Image (cartoon, rainbow, N blue to C red; front, side, top):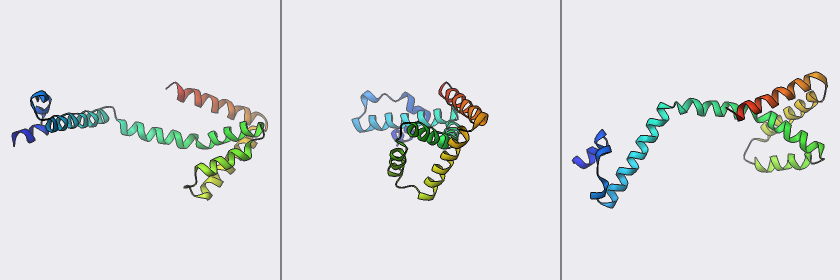
Length: 134
């Protein structure tokens, strides 16, 4: 019984796994790995970082699609990109994909009309560079 309770106490760090059975040694190492992962996750506040990453990915989705359509539209490949995005996201609701496509095209139209487009493009570029070097 003492061997099992050692796995769930701080005595796990002092267990000599070379003198144990192979199964018990692997169990000890696995539980050590789980404990290190959980403690590191909590200490580094990884939950907040996961939420922030999800927020930035969601925030960057429409500008990324607009960038893809703008670059591919300049080369005459926008229909192929549109078909590829629809094929890759076959599990996603078609209304959502249509909305993303419409918003992306709206963003391209705004970007092609004067100073607002220039400021928007520069802000987008700065955001991309800022996120890359964080």
